Amino acid sequence: MPPIDATITNAPIKDPSRLPHEKGFHISWDQLHRDSRALAWRLDGHGPDNGGWRAVVAITRGGMAPAMIVARELDIRTVDTISIKSYDHQAQSEAKVLKSPDADIMGDGTGILIVDDLVDSGRTLEVVRGLYPNAHFATVYAKPKGRPQVDTFITEVSQDTWIFFPWDMALQYVEPYRGKD
Image (cartoon, rainbow, N blue to C red; front, side):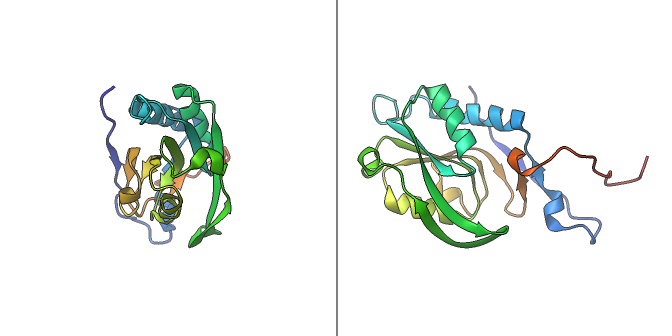
């Protein structure tokens, strides 16, 4: 499969009454599934154990859906989670580990694939990388500030883009940006 390298750029906001996050990047369940499968394909055969991975660890909560898809695609049966809290009401705060994965599985991270939906500032991955320095870090989406913390990703978005994941959205009518008809 050829590499996927898409960069999302944003035009300037024309209406100053609109909030910055209204220029966001909306991800559907279908798109998340396709992008997570692409991540699995990119990782296939690149693990340290004859190309395989010992386990997948999802960074909760956002990494759970992509990690499940990656684990399924790569036939990895050992799946665990690490819970990091780094946001309070859409504002970043100091990253704190709330739940760690099984220590017997993790070791220093060798052969472990750690998956998240997005690397933003990189602070969450920095904390996890400090705990498991030899793990492989993969995200579906990456922003420039966080890119140094991730080993593999699929789509880069600009730092000022707010990503709306499918679990954050409801189906409802939205006024068109321009005009009423």
